[in-house]
Length: 340
Ligand code: NAD
Ligand code: UFG
Figure 1 (cartoon, helix red, strand yellow):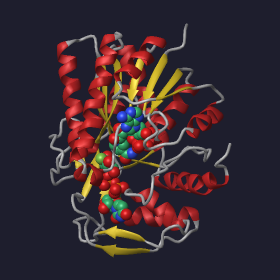
Figure 2 (spheres, rainbow, N blue to C red):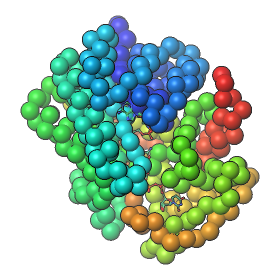
Figure 3 (cartoon, protein in one colour):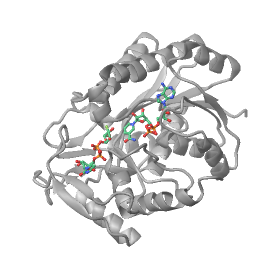
């Protein structure tokens, strides 16, 4: 049987690179397309080193129709996993046009190219941020959709485009995957999350405090209606998230169907629980200060992940201790192996 070829947009990014490794290990051929706006080209070699397999890398932009045309013309692509996008919530609020253009127009260009070349199998990176704040905080796939920021709107709009495409043409197989809070790194320490500048997200911030690059963590509020007053989130190990993509793809191809699923653990953890787990696992101290709530944050957000388990047998395996250990290995190791 010939190997299936998967195009990964945003392939050198955090989630794309980990998913690429697992696809290669499962004997898919992988083509990465990335404009390197938020990642580095050496990720390609790192992915090859971990997997022991070759990857095709194209530096290009999903908004560039000519580039897309060439990619589909020159390669026998069976399916696309679409990660390319901008993802900083605060930046989306201050630069809405850039976010709509990149995330929505870019996605539309990609879907048009796919349609032209008859490639109609797609996984799309959506986010738990498409759910509105229902006051309970546990979200299943039928929960109301009501994004509260520009970034979330871009995800909602692309989801809606995909629902309309499926309604118009039943030969599309679309997987809408709503991620909760991806953290951690590949256990080899070769790839991980590498945010530019000061991190916005909790886990990379904690890692930089533990390493001494930042002096302390600001904990955004301890007066939420949660057991310790800090926000509760559903942190999911990047390896589990990547595995969720493989299971989704396998399920869609086998059953010739479309899906919309949450990818989370179903276990909420507070900010302070994550801080203490990190300190315990790494034996480093993570000084913190309680500050004001961050605008736009909700108290609680975690997944009901039961649909993914029922449909395709996928469930997360790793706990927060493993998430912290792998983040720390990447944080410390990546500095010593920048050249591979
Ligand atoms: P990332 O920034 O590490 O990866 C995204 C990649 O896309 C980057 O390598 C970037 O260079 C590339 N890219 C951006 N715009 C592009 C364009 N126009 N053309 C080509 N490449 C482009 O982010 P990530 O954490 O790996 O996220 C991947 C996807 O998952 C994103 O769509 C993101 O919105 C979504 N998501 C992420 C999270 C999270 O917390 N990490 C949560 C929910 C959803
Ligand atoms: N937090 C702090 N201090 C920090 C950073 C975060 O206390 O320096 C707290 C937040 O208040 C929140 C929790 O840590 O309670 C998690 O915050 P993150 O910024 O790590 O994650 P969010 O839940 O706010 O958002 C993330 C992604 C979004 C995505 C969402 C749901 O950033 O893109 O998960 O998938 F949409």
